[in-house]
Length: 188
Image (cartoon, rainbow, N blue to C red; front, side, top):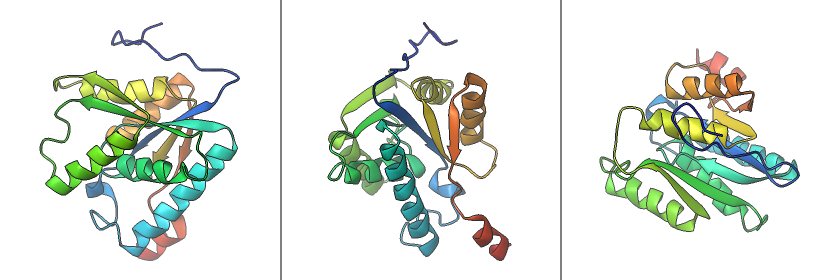
């Protein structure tokens, strides 16, 4: 079976491990920006780790990441760290196109490459950029997953579109807002 772009849709593997894909904001939309030592970010990473361990306990073993700055790389690093405790867990990197990180800083590229090197599988959607490549990557993630874990609090953009696509495809969505509700009310 193929999706609207002609990509093969991954069949759900009933009876085997479940798959979880990630979608979420880039650093510019996160309340802490690029400062991952910010207490709000550290608290978010703690909740993300707890969520991933819960999902592993529920039978999720394959985790798909779109390899983007922000939530994707953060979640990928936590999955890799959890392999010590859960060696059956796999990380699958879904790269939209070969030059995705060309405009990133050297530190960002190095972080991404280390994650890709440690991952279990790499899927490339395209070798070259075109205006639909990120949509195809996001659709591939959703179409390959049993669950979409979303760092999402309602802001418009690519994450919102991916969440909407998951709902339309009948894929369950677990929202993990970057800031807990009580914190966001106190800040506002």
